[in-house]
Length: 113
Length: 111
Image 1 (cartoon, each protein chain N blue to C red):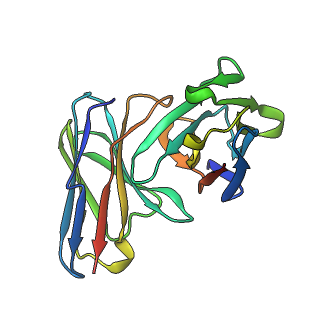
Image 2: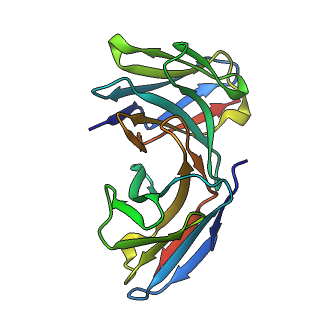
Image 3: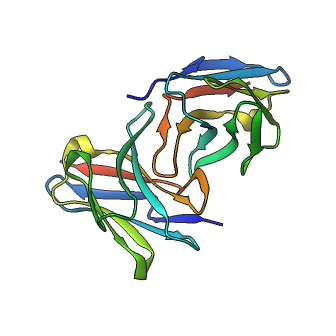
């Protein structure tokens, strides 16, 4: 069975500071990994995804994530936080013949002016 | 944006009443899913479909049933709504392991 652990249910950063949201996964086979963002009262928007091509994946809004098989991690980063980045972020995994996504519990990002 | 429409977008219902949520897609994707989102739990899979009339249970299927009589429509039914089913429900579609597109969600309140 696949699982995802997001470390930290709430993360606060200052505007302009580095954003680092942590995600570790458990999967018996090479996974597909995703980061989604959810703004208040909205649906989920795909930020980026890893599908076994490049291990460093660039997404929208300046976010990127690095797949590290040895650490079973897929952490999300952004060099400089903007106020508009305040949202909830979800890491998810699929694969091993299972098309459904398994989600982490989410990390709410606050950006302090 | 992927063509996914959820209806209704908001609903308030009484305990014990049946409720049906609808997900309609225009992408002709084979796979459709229903998730519920609750604070501290992320999104959890309720049921999914891998084709017309082909459905299976997810992690939190108790109290829910689904039907898919056409490729484009996936219905989620709460036979007798309970307060624990107050949640935000999301429909998703996919055609492979490498993608999934989500609807805008339905906020259901059971009073």
